[in-house]
Length: 270
Image 1 (cartoon, rainbow, N blue to C red):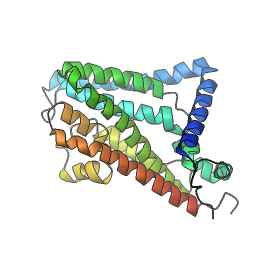
Image 2 (image 1 turned 120 degrees about the horizontal axis):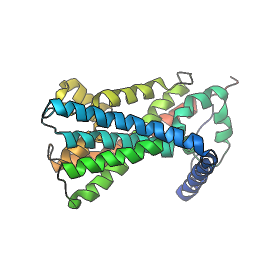
Image 3 (image 1 turned 30 degrees about the vertical axis):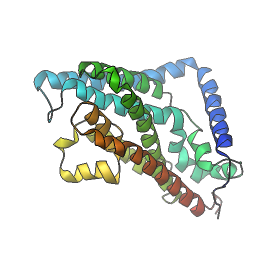
Image 4 (image 1 turned 180 degrees about the horizontal axis):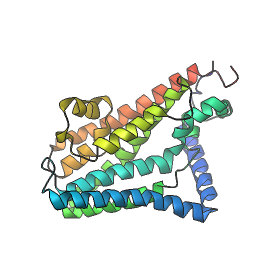
C-alpha cells in the first residue's frame, strides 16, 4: 500500500507546479501548427454556442426571465472555467491512465504531492480558444446587460473561483479511477455532460431535484449560475458567500478523494 507524502512546504509545491507547467508550455510552442489547430477547435465550440443563443433569442424574448446578454454571460463563464481547467490542471484527466500503467509509482517517489504532479502533467491546447472566446462572450454579455465597472471585482472573483471549482470537481471524479480501473474518467465526463446540457440555461427551468443537485450535491451552479445571477440581479448578493464555500468544499473533496485513492493504490504490478 502506498500513501501520499506529507509535510512538503507550499512554496516548494508551487515551484514544482510552475516549473512543470512552463515546461509543458515550451513543449507546446515547438509545434505551432498543432497549437493553432487545437486553439481553433476550442474557439469553434464557443462560436457555435454564440450562434445558438443568437438564433434562440431571435425567436423568444427571454428564457425563464433571462435575456440574451445574461445567457451569454452564463455560457462565457462556464467556458472560461473549462478552459482554465484544461490550461492549468488538464493532467487530472490522465489519472486513470497513470493508475493502469503504474506511472503513479514514479510520482510517489518525488518530494511533492502526487495530485500536483498529475494535475500539472498536461495542458489542453484547446483551452486557449475556450478562454479567449469565453472571455469575449462574458464581456459582451456584461456590457449588454448594463453591468458597470463597479462590479468588476465580483467578476474577477467569479472567474478565479469558477476555474478552481471546475478543476477540483474534475479531479475528485477522475480520482474514482483508483478503484474503477480504466483510461477514461467516466464520472468526470458525466459532469461535463451535465454542465453542457444544464448549466448554460437558467436553473429555474429545471425541476427542484436538479436544482438541489447542482447547488449543493455537485456544486456546479457556483461555477457560473450563482455569480451571474447575482451580477444580473436575479439573486441576492448573499448568494456570493456560497462561491468561496464551494471552492473550499470542492478542493477538500478533491484532496480527500485523491488521498484515499493513493492509499488504495497498489501499483500496476499487483
